[in-house]
Image 1: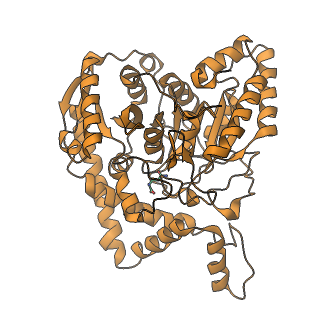
Image 2: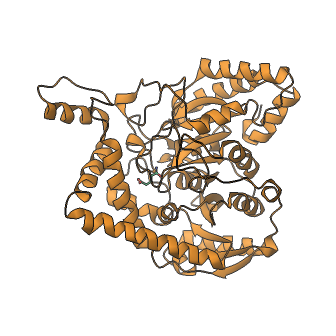
Image 3: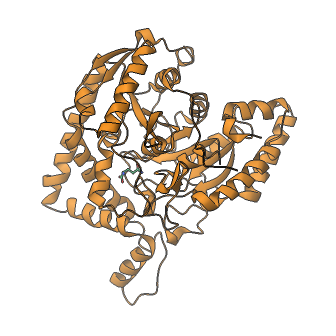
Length: 477
Ligand code: GLN
């Protein structure tokens, strides 16, 4: 099988038609995955026997006459999503061998639709970050330039055709920035569209589950499977799927896309040129373009970090070695906390726990946290007002190229990378990152942002804009 040319939809069709079997497909991709993992460090765990067992069950269902929408499709899952039969580390050495008693709703919906989980991917310390440089397993490397980070290990796995669909979390931009850095497509759905049951998120207000793939059809197919109300996640929306509208073809002539001229001016020249070229291509595809402004972008980024820090300190407090996490021998309670947290958290998780506790402490709560909440409301209003005038917004996804693996970047500078993604998370809007070109022979993507629950329009518009997806030339297997 030539996985680089195969979409998930085509793979499922081949399995459903009997052109191949799920077992054959999974066997071949596992071989590819193992060989490439030595070069890219994208997977923490490759699920050999477990995946083959799942594939055999899919073949049995297909043989009995069932048609499964994702029959035999190899799926990778970020390691902050629980899987019933595979370890889930959350990016912590303390959870290296932890097997969750339940699986994440989105993962189980995919496997019920015939997909096969082939492994868990690398991630930052407790899932916090967008580079994987703080991962206990070391960074995942970019298949376009292995001296650089991938941003998202799973986006690299999709680009290297180690899997056909990747399920991952995105809080302030990890999924979208990874898709941009690796030249693939990443969708962060509206908050509430996909159940987060079984996701470990450091920032509950922003953490969402999204999909990365190399074709818009695959993104749509996976979204249809994983979206919908879930009684186990009170934050899922009682949203009724509008099937007639859902599959309606997108007519570019009637779609107005906002273009942020003032924001584009903030970019480095190469990235700016790329955005301007993308604008011309989008206009040539027939879409109407109109200018828009967002005045609160910088404030939104600061508010995101204050709220995310506060939520991290609260969400991570349960990892105390008593309720959750690994306990070390200790003489007293303080020592137990101290030692257990050191076994569980790396530097970034510790930093956020400490700053978050500070932000939520008496006096600072009003000074920082309450102010950030006010800004959050203003940001939502600003996006709503802009989206009253436009159907979709075009925004950069990244400010720079992915960092060199050897580069030591100050944590505040890393936070600044989220200038374009974190505000969209704050607004709770759906966003799709699509590749639009290259800078220094590395892919760069941009975001299309839509109104709540407009994922189908985003996917439809992206399918009109995306040039043919390119795969990294150096990944030979
Ligand atoms: N870089 C952002 C943060 O560290 C977002 C990370 C993410 O989306 N997982 O908060």
